[in-house]
Image 1 (cartoon, one colour):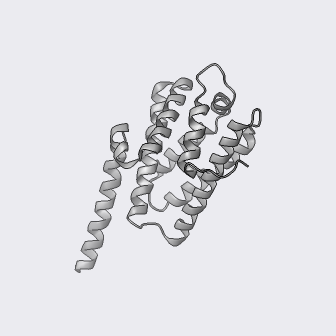
Image 2 (cartoon, rainbow, N blue to C red):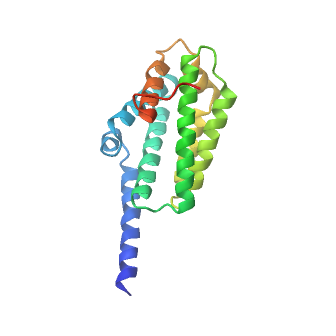
Image 3 (tube, one colour):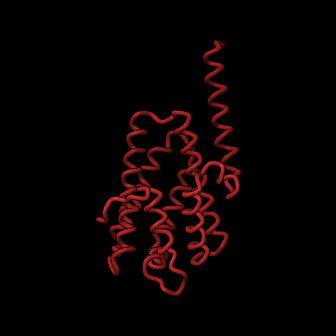
Length: 192
């Protein structure tokens, strides 16, 4: 067997082991090594919101799945495993994610402007793109994680709790500025 084939097999095996190990260790402590402080604040706020509206185990599972998805996609990206069309899809996903954040911020800034159908459509577009990106690289279990997370964030009751519920602390007052600053920096574009 040639040295090139052995090196390629070793690299592939190493990357598979890395994804597997990090997937199993996706706790908040481990995630802090791979996710920056600002993203950590967003995840902490999401976790707090989810725990107020869902059973604690379910909230924990959603956050853990988000972290696993981020870490695995990060590993693929840092190891340059995405084909040119997947890199293009990744850029499209980031644009759509930025647009989703601006939509969320607008709904937060403008009272009674929340449009559930529009928000769910944006979530569905991002979910579809993420699945297209990861399918050639990750297992069906990872795809199920993506669908699980987006399925929860598309639930009418959860969206109503985020945008309309006054019975709990208004997590949107914390989450919207965090997301805006995380995606756009301290000088965000004007609201749509």
